[in-house]
Each structure stands twice: as C-alpha cells, then as structure tokens.
Length: 628
Image 1 (cartoon, rainbow, N blue to C red):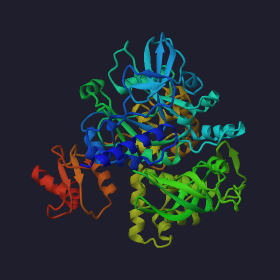
Image 2 (image 1 turned 90 degrees about the horizontal axis):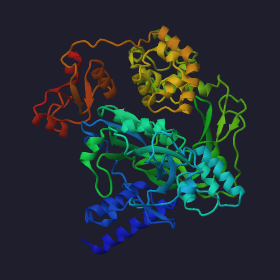
Image 3 (image 1 turned 90 degrees about the vertical axis):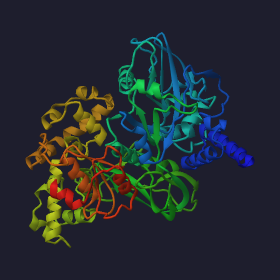
Image 4 (image 1 turned 180 degrees about the vertical axis):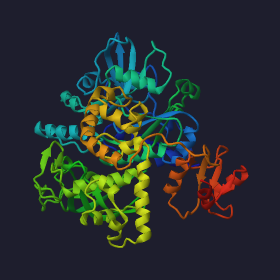
C-alpha cells in the first residue's frame, strides 16, 4: 500500500468537495466517484470517506440534532434491484442543488442551516426567508424539522442572470452552481428569491409516522412543495422510472443527477440504521457522465409537439463515454440568448444518461461571429413568440408539431415496428395527420408505401392493433398531456380515476388530492387534459377498451420469468406477452424464478448455469409461445 498515494487521493477528494460545495466543481461526478472508489480500495478506513458535505464557508455553524448524512450511490441497475430486494420503496428525483434543514419552534420557522459536514451546518436563516417554497409557520404542529433541497429552475436562473448583470455583478456560470454561490455571498441577500425549496423529509417527534409516503402527505398538508414520488411494491417499474429521470435530465426545468430510492417502512429503516457516511435505507442511482470540449458548427431549431423551439448544436464530433457525439441540446432559447451562443464557440458538453448530450458552459466565444435567433418557425414559417426562456410556434397545424406528437405517441404506446422514416412516408402520402389516423390504416394503404410488402404490412397492422390493449395509465401517459408522464398517470389511475368517464369528470381539486400533485401541477394537467378529451373519445370509438381483461389459464399464469440470450422476436414483444398472460419478468435468476426463457442449447451464460444449479425449468422461445 502506498501511503503517499493515499495521502494524495485524500487531499484531492477534500479539495474537490470544497470546490463543489462552494459552487465551482472541478470534476464531473463520475470522475469524483472513481476517486472515492480508488481510496476505498486502498484505505477502506480512511476518515475522508466518511466526510459529508464540505469545509465551512465562514458562516456561523450550528450542530444538527440528527445528522444530515450523504447518500450511498450506484450506477448499476442490477445492484440497485439487489439492494431493493423484496422491500417496498419510494423513488424521487435526486436534485442537483444544496441540502437544507428548517427548524420550527412553536410552529414558527426559527432556524435554517445547510448540511455542512453532516454534523454541523451553516446558519442561512436570513437568506432562506427570501426563497420560494419556504413555509414560515403553521398551526398543526409546534416543534419539528423539515429537510429538503434548495435549487434554481431554468426560468429563475435566466431572470437571476439578467438581474446580477444589471446590478454590476458577474454573470453566473451555471444553473447547477448558483445556489451554493448565493448562499455563500455576504451581500445582495435579496437575490435568494430566485432560489426554490422543495421538502423531502420531516422529523416530527410529536407524531408517530410509519412510512415515507405518510411523511410526504404531512409535508404537503403543511404547504411545502414536494417532489413527485413513485411507490414501488416490487422492482417491476424501476427501469421505467429511471428512463423518466433520463428524459427529465434532458428536458426538465431544473437540474437532477439521478434518482433516490428509499425504503418506505420507517421501522425497517430503523432496523437497517446508518454508517457514519450514509443511511443504509436509501440509495441513489446515478447516470455515469463524461464531459468534453468541442466547437459549435451550426445551431438548428427543432419544433416539439407543444410548439417549443429547441436549439440543437451541431458540433465537431467528439467521443464521450464510448459514443461519437455530433449533436448537443442547448436546452432552450434562454440558454442561447444568455450565453450568446453561435457558430464557432468552444463549449463544454456532458453526456450522463441523456438521449442527446447537453451544453454545460462556454469555454471560448467566437468574437468574429454574430448571435442570432429565428424569427419564424423552421417548419411552418409562422412568426415565433418569445415567452420567458422559450421560443414558441403557436400554429396548431404546424407540420413538425403534428409529427412530433404522433411520433412521441408511437414510442410511448409501444408500436415498435413503426419507424420515423415510415411515419414520414405516411404523413407525406396523406394517410396520417393525427394519432387516431393510425387506427384507420388498412393493408392496401400500407402496401402503397415505399418498401412495404405484404408481410411487413401485416406486422405493422398487428402492432398497431395490439396497442389498443395497453393499461389505461400507459395510454394516458402516451397521448401528450402536459405533466402526464407515466408515473403521474399511474398515480392518477391508482387513485381511482381508472376509466374514461372518471377522467372526463376529474377536477383540479380532485387531482390535488392525488399523491405527488400540487395546485399548479394539477391545474396544468387538467387544462391540458381538456384539449385531449375529444381525441380520447375518438380513440375509444376506434376500439380502445380499458375494461379489466380476464387472463386465460396457461402454465405461465402468475409465474416469474428471466430471459437471456439471442431471440428471434424482439425482447419487448416477449415481455409484453408474458405480462399479458399474467406473468412477470425479472432481469436476474433467483430461487424465486419459475422459468428461464432462452434459445441457448448449452448452459454457457451465467444465468443459464444458475438456473441449472437451482433446478429452474428452462424453456425455449417456441415452447413459450406454443403454450401461452
């Protein structure tokens, strides 16, 4: 063991922590995590590994009555599922902000402090009182503590940057670092009104609380803004939630760097306890990321189904995390305007789970080039409108808006064989101009398309017809309702709004009672839903049926499958069939697995070998479909 290497690693980790918590990180998260992993291997008992937070910034320090610990993390889905095991857990976004504790005495906010080193935090009470989402007092309880995250939305960061420049301060470099920067300032305290607070925990000695879900209900009752949470009774929907987090990292209005999972049962939490660094009953899943410097070749504007013009930078190709990157999202008009982004600028980009890598900062501005934005929609030619940080095309007949709405639906509802190119052909030939048009397609229609022959036409029609049988929450989460992601729609349906009739009569007040919804998100969802009701009715007339289906008796009803090896059908198609006949799918083999489905003839894979050792029946793809 090299003591000098350990010392250098410890010094580097401490320096990185200091830079991160003072608002100017010097390493991407995944590179910092590698440093910790290396130190853990060389010196597992190093005190630096137990450090939480960072060194102090000079503000007055206060001891936390209950430690504010860090989180254990993983980048591996199988490791996450193994940790969850059979426990009931909740998941929520992992904010990329600064943690904060609010202490209430006699029902009044008396103290606010940062996490600090986990044992002692810094007094930021005067600054917190300016922030959005802070409840200054309540009548329900007297002495308690609320913990949450301080963060800055894209809109607020845009307005904050303008105000800071207008009063002679340096323009902030990024949305991610501004919170630490503001709470560390000794002047201009009013700028903290651009920061938001969202609560994720409550310590309430006067009330017996049994679950994490109950905590969030109490926080909501007290008037706090809370994150959207998803309750998982198994690991079945874990990957779905992680995919939504990936999407939010690209499209969301605030910064997240993963998803946090917590065991729901507080008695179980107490039983598991904590290390000096993290609670054993929480786990953060993060997406491995890497950043690089490249140069903008051009900026193009894509039109979304909501009419938002999203800027995409075409850049000099660079390799990031094993992928060759030539396109980068610039988020929105506000980012382009704020940084005056243009051809020739050298920029830092990152890829950490996003479908398209994203812009981080400008490294060198091209002085000889001019910043411009479009005045007309690149798709329909109509005038665009600036609304806060976004550019909008408000033409409902805009070709790009229509196409993106249909394409998003196809992907979310699971019509796997209908590609973007084939949809383009359908639109250009006049066969499809709306989602319901997909269900009016006939075989002769498809045979008139380029490179579509008899077999493919039948396959497409079957895939489209099969999509009529999805669960109601999946249907709602596919049609494009604002705020209607799958997890939100799942909660709505689980709350009893499980038919078209009930959805039609649902009000803002009804939705506000559903877990995860607040007044604003309820208003947005209901307002958007109303515009989709005619289409929902049209789709019902075209054959959508959301009544409970009776599952036929087969040898596989209620059985748990693991799938491995190469297959003749798409894996998603096989998984859908297993679920349709009352089975479930696991990503690994265990004693609870009923069948291993594989076309392998010899036990060469680890899953096959484990199935043999556990005496689990092995069946082929054809065996399954012949008996299903």
